[in-house]
Each structure stands twice: as structure tokens, then as C-alpha cells.
Image 1 (cartoon, one colour):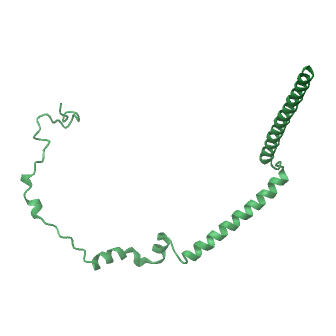
Image 2 (image 1 turned 90 degrees about the vertical axis):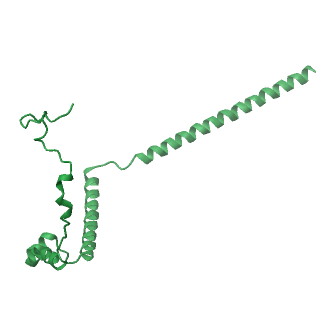
Image 3 (image 1 turned 45 degrees about the horizontal axis):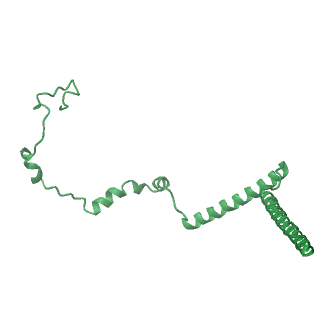
Length: 147
């Protein structure tokens, strides 16, 4: 009986040691993965160091790209609006445009009809004259204010 107890405790101790080793190995692997992930992330943020030569070569490429984009845009604008002049250029080249609006209005029959009967009975309107107000004084701008 004593011998079996000794064997069982020895096996338990050995199993506990194995479990502890497995746990420590897993923790170390986890730490190693975290460390590798952190280093990989640092590599993403760590780029080429900028030197004068690197910068000048990059700037030359960048300026060439911008110039190409501007040329492309200019070609598109030229194709979209060929011979499209500004308003000032139109007036400078064609002096008939000075009177074109007047001619357009005359051709369209520039006649506005006004019903004068609406304005004949002005007495019906309740217009306040400043002269009728006893509190009004033209010299004092605050005299017209009501309390």
C-alpha cells in the first residue's frame, strides 16, 4: 500500500511538471508571436531613410507625374471647349455683342403692361406720414420709437 502511494505521488508530480512545462512553452510561444508581430508592425512604419539624393530623385518623379497630369487635363479642356472664349474675349472680338441684349429685348416685344388702376386709389392705403406723428422729431432719431 505504501509503495502504491509512493508511485502514484511520483506520477502525479511528474504529470504536474509536464503540465507546467506545456504551460510555460505556450506562454513563451505566445510572447514570441507577439514580439514578432510587434517587429513586423515596426517594419511597416520604418521606411527608407530620407537623404538629399533620395528626395531629389523622388521630387523629379513627382514633378514629372504632375506635369503629365496637367498636360492631360489641358488636352481634355481643349477638346471639351475648343475655341471657347471668355466673355471679355467675346466682347473684344465682336462689337455687335454690345447691343445684342437690347436687340433681343426689342425683338421679343419689350412691352410691359402696368395696370394703373391699382395705383389710383392711394387714399385707401394706410400710410403713416412722419409729419402726422406728434412724437416725431427729425433731429432726434429715437423720438419715433414707441414705448
